[in-house]
Amino acid sequence: MDQLTQFAPIILMFVVVYFFMIRPQMKRAKQEKQFSSELKKGDRVITKSGMHGKVVDFSEKQNAVIIETGAGKITFDRSSISMEMSRKLNEPAKEVK
Image 1 (tube, rainbow, N blue to C red):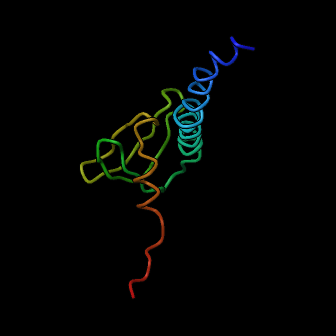
Image 2 (image 1 turned 180 degrees about the vertical axis):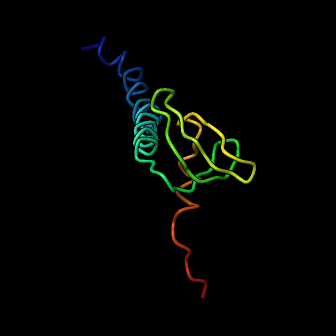
């Protein structure tokens, strides 16, 4: 029993780290993977580097997205699409009172 009380703070520390750091990262990675798999032609997106464009086509062989921008068509990896910024861009405008 004495050994268990010695290790209780260490065990508690691992539990806290898991629930406050590891689990949210896993949940976020799952959401980003789902977002990139749900992309479709015509979606307006923003890359993590700040490039704005519209999805024109997909390259399943390279796991890439072809985006049309003002400069032309550019191929990006699916993981380079920003989930947060793209969702903000596509959500309907809110009325200002």
